[in-house]
Image (tube, rainbow, N blue to C red; front, top):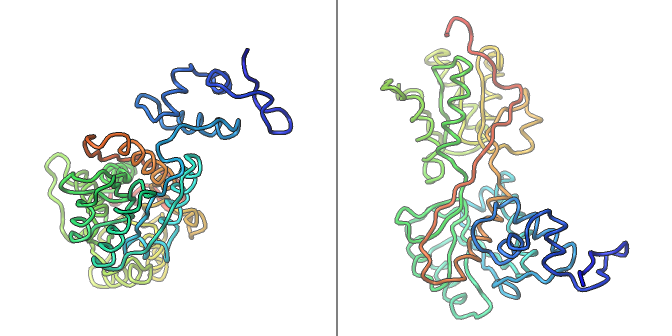
Length: 351
């Protein structure tokens, strides 16, 4: 006899089975089984739908993480993001929501030094409740080396391991920057200034994506179109942009920024110079934070799927915990362009 889904009281009238979930989700029983067990071959959005329905029906989710802990270590760069923007906050929300679905527990710790990291890893290695480690925005080579020696599964979140010893989940930074540059070029822009704060591997990928498109077809790249700033603060970007224009004039028609915070600074700097956005100069950010809709003008940006990055990292850690001999994987999530009012056609004289 088939089980019934929850009634109006929210409680199931009989024990829920896989075929009830399959019917509710409009998929096969085999698909439900694969989605709940973490087996490959099911689209991530369908896995999320099935898991949510299982939680709604109070179906006992199979999970190697149930009752275990995930240790989350936040690097200084992650803590800087957390203090200044919503990036780390959104990633953490994605992690925590997926962990709840898997009936596990999250333990978070900020790491400010390699010694502090080693101590945290040593304690986690001997704690049977810790299933694995998620490391947020890790770029420091010494910290990476310590993480590679950890005896349990490790997933880098918003980062990558250049040696491919550790698995990672990050935005498609290079492809996203290339997409942003393509968008500006379709609007007629050829002199596209790139603002960034160098250092992180994820940001280097954004620089590479911009360069890929700017040099397509053998076009020589003007090195003066790349501005490396000492910080992510909007004030620094505004100051640097004003100084450049006062010294060189307006020798660009668009500004592509490696973050929304730099884009805010670019908008502020251009406004104080009396340069209209987007009539004279277009500005495009990367992050897609919600506050961009309230910039003046509202910011066109590449939106990074921050919460999905967090959820995917948990899923990857769960997969790695199923088999110690699984190879490391680098997963990149696609970004999408959010069009608002800060970008427009290049001025006619520059086309």
